[in-house]
Length: 300
Image (cartoon, rainbow, N blue to C red; front, side, top):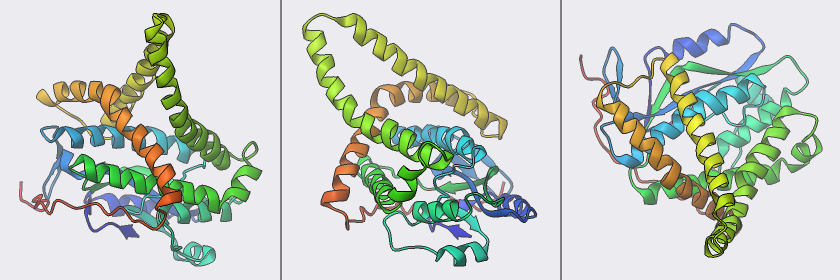
């Protein structure tokens, strides 16, 4: 098992993922990662809280969508792109078969892809366990968030280059290459650059008073992302990640800011991270940790 030093497991997480390995075809498993600061942890239970910094609330919503919607869906399609290094579980023999971790920017992404290609066309599988939760400390400043996301984006570009032959060869025939090329690369990366160009055109359209097309674009953008947020929170509720009282109001304001502010920040990190892979490849972009005592073992 891999576990980050700034992360802590929900008490039942290990027993839940262990059960999945009763199936001999399971070679690796991934748990759910959630923002540590958005929970008040004790020896018996974890209570959700949104009475935290805005940046942490934005990350908490993002992790909910990413884990309970996106990653869970990819796992169902046998196309999980990354078992997070914060909480990953592997059979020893599969690690030996693929040569273990490599010296790359994103060791967890690289390892997951090696395993996926190794077990391709077999009955072996990687599973996602949404009930097994790992709490990890989120960056508390925009500077550190940008550093983190730049590193993530650099690791994606590196993996894309390292596995290019397998990915581009099977893009239209295998689910994992399809999602990595079409979804992650085209929709996630290339479209980010296109959006910048589009923004310039939008400004030009505003100057020429052609507002109908602009309104249509923003209506589609807001509708898609709003639906994504609502679905993510609904699924999280099913897995007992629930909010009460004033936290519901904080969630609404956070979703609004996610649409109008946080998307721009993520767009920026994707573009800068992609470029910096070629200009600052060996820079790690280390994130400072808060050093807070979260009293994770306090008694109820």
